Amino acid sequence: MTVADLIYELEQLNPEAQVRFASQPNWPFEYSIASVVQVEIEDRRTEEVVETVYLEEGRQIGYLPGEAKDELGW
Image (cartoon, rainbow, N blue to C red; front, side, top):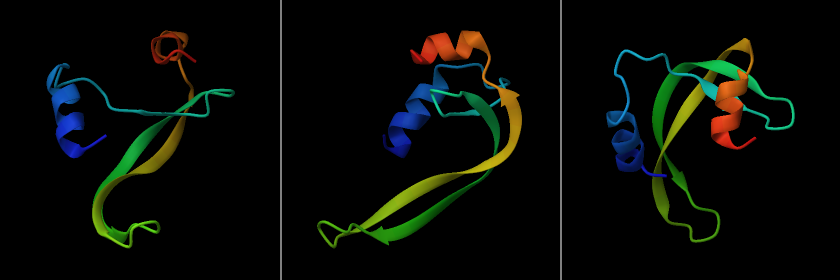
């Protein structure tokens, strides 16, 4: 997924909605997002420098709600 893909997906949603990160399909939890950073890294296969965006995991909020788990297909 690129930043453009993510922006497109987010533009389809309510801008006032909370943002969470879902993790571990076999033991699903939800997390807040602590920060967003962009770095240049070298692709180990091609040695090409690639700009990459990382979402930093924030605090664990709790178990992922069933509705979100179902929507993700977990």
